[in-house]
Length: 167
Image (cartoon, one colour):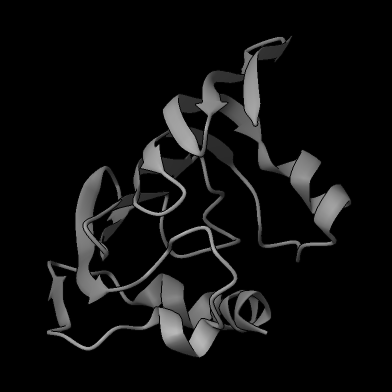
């Protein structure tokens, strides 16, 4: 199997780009780049709650093979209206390789990171027909949560919106 392609879609300040190769079950610099995507658009496609709003930037790279994939990605959601969620920006970074997932989530209020969650999890994400329950692997799991001068008052006002997202 060989797939080689480049895709680019632009509208105003929004941009979606995809490039890379898949050849003989090998990923060769598969890249996805999304810039300034208005999340209102996604609400209509995926029937998301009203609290989903703002703009998204995504940078993702996949390499390796079907049997040993490697992935790194960064997602930033910004310009979140204060009446929807209790933070103005969310940053998510994921790295996967050697059957381990590392993730970092940061929430910002007034341009300062007020919540940081770091997670490490042994995980098998090979592109095979492996049941979900077998993808979680034995090994150390680490989680670290850090709160810094978190203004909790917006959480009270937006608890219904947060509950909507979790359902």
